[in-house]
Amino acid sequence: MSLINEAGDYLTERAGAAPEAALILGSGLGDLAEEAENKRIVEYKEIPGFPVSTVQGHKGRLVFGTMGGKRVVFMQGRFHYYEGYSMKEVVFPIWVFNSLGVKKLIVTNAAGGINTSFKPGDLMIIKDHINYTNNNPLIGPNLEAFGPRFPDMSAAYSKELADIIRECAASEDIKLQEGTYLFLTGPSYETPAEIRAFRILGADAVGMSTVPEVLAANHCGIKTAGISCITNMAAGILDTPLNHKEVMETADRVKESFSRLIRCVIERI
Image (cartoon, rainbow, N blue to C red; front, top):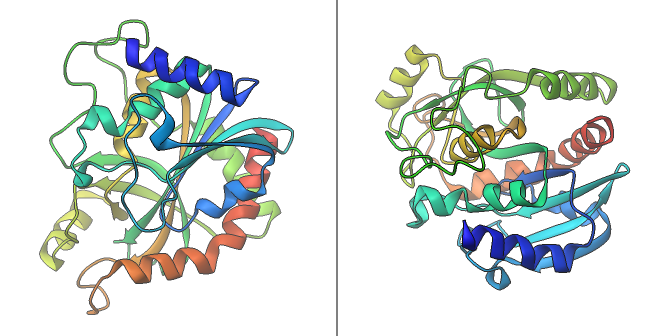
């Protein structure tokens, strides 16, 4: 707790008014933060206790500012278990946001499509998730000041926020898919056999992030919504090799519609 409070105090001094909402911007989606007004930028490496992003497409900084009349903090880059960080390090920013008073969180990611009706470039509301890692950031002593020992995950993704996302997609004429996101550790992509198994389990998309952050946010009582950018079809569907370059190129292609959607959502939450 002491390190969380130290990071919170550090950011309070530099960010000014406390943010109302936080956005975690996944691979290739970080440019949205540049559209904020009255920006104050803090590099991760300057914040006590913060890890540092090592993945291409993650700038590694917090951007505090206003958008749609709301005070928002953007994470330009997140932390992944596959980078060698512990699950607690992965979700450290969520605990810091909670200490700052953040009440709503939107998590975004680049994901592989398992549902064969999806195509690269689709945006998907995350309705639920499958944690296929056998790991959880809440293992260990419970942060009693933040939440209960056994947090309920029956509504991990806020129906209220999901409705707002749907309304904004309709008003902006943006096609929106919906589905279940399956979380794996990575960094290797999945095999075709694994993808066939995950489809049987009910997964529509697969990725290497987001779920730890959602677990920590729900534990803290932060209302959470998730949006995946389907940047590629998962292994075995199109019989083509998978690579991070394709992820970045697809995210870049959809960033205009993604930005319009998120700006609308922020205005309405």
